[in-house]
Image (cartoon, rainbow, N blue to C red):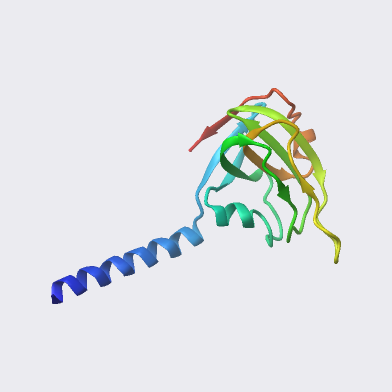
Length: 147
């Protein structure tokens, strides 16, 4: 029984260590659209999707957050707790199906902006406001995800 307790305790320590490491080093990948490559944090779990970039003070140059939604649908997003404006790039499979540019962050007690794509999407990529225009990203562009 003593060995069993040591194994269980070791497993618990390992699990907490992995959780702590993941908090410091979130999953990320690269996303290339129209010949431009971004570093992308991944939002996979429901909690990651709910929080998104909310509360973060800035987003580095050529960085973004890629939300993996599963099935294509009219997934809704809002700018709760956002500190800076964003561009939204909506994908179905690997194709840009919609773009929402220069979405403002809420100021003071204003209600956060809510939005949905015009067409079903299974991935949403949030980047700094102005990046869509800066890199000439348009509907019909293809995305490439790399590690």
